[in-house]
Length: 165
Image (cartoon, rainbow, N blue to C red; front, side, top):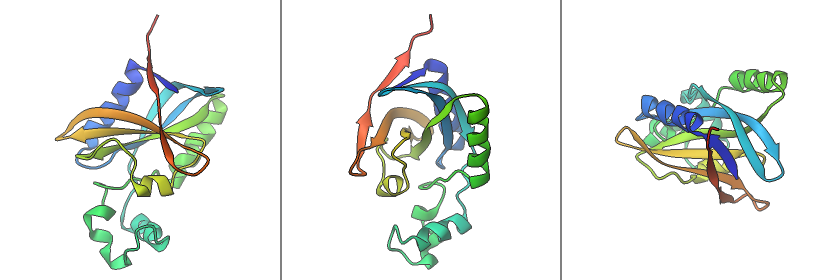
């Protein structure tokens, strides 16, 4: 289970709507207690997907597509995201300094359901929650959280909204 407050979810929705029709992305800071993750902060990042990163991922042969196809919709920010390595390093440092963990990554699926793609699965890490928000015609809708199981398959994770007291 992953616990958010209303403001955290709103930050994700706003970032997703502002980047539509491209995918948004960001990092989630928080704490882990057994199987419960509690979000402390949601940090929107820039989607660093570009021709060079598309080529790097194409070289990994995830899509069995030739490098010539990287201008295709499946290789654009409308269907792919990545967080720049230097941004991830800075975020890891910031989390360490604040005594929190990176507990997840969020991104949007423009005009597509809030379920992980094969591409999402292939580059996911088992320790993280993956929050996906569906954005239909510019409006954030369904949001789901996913975690990798021991067989590297995504399983849906409960999202619980924390009530401010």
